[in-house]
Length: 76
Image 1 (tube, one colour):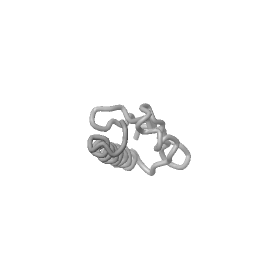
Image 2 (tube, helix red, strand yellow; image 1 turned 90 degrees about the horizontal axis):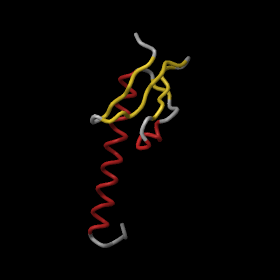
Image 3 (cartoon, helix red, strand yellow; image 1 turned 120 degrees about the horizontal axis):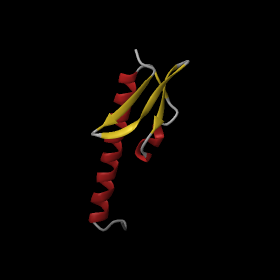
């Protein structure tokens, strides 16, 4: 097993995880994933799932804001 992995989500480099004494520490490589920076994951698969879930959540929140902006309820 390797000590470092690149995590990609939808073709974007989400971050790098590096083996730590407690698991794998996430180091964000794009600001969209800063909320995960420094978190420890049990394994690379768990880190990748968290990054995918995080991006989906951001996209969902962003699309809701765009709909509100388009309705003229808030300014862009």
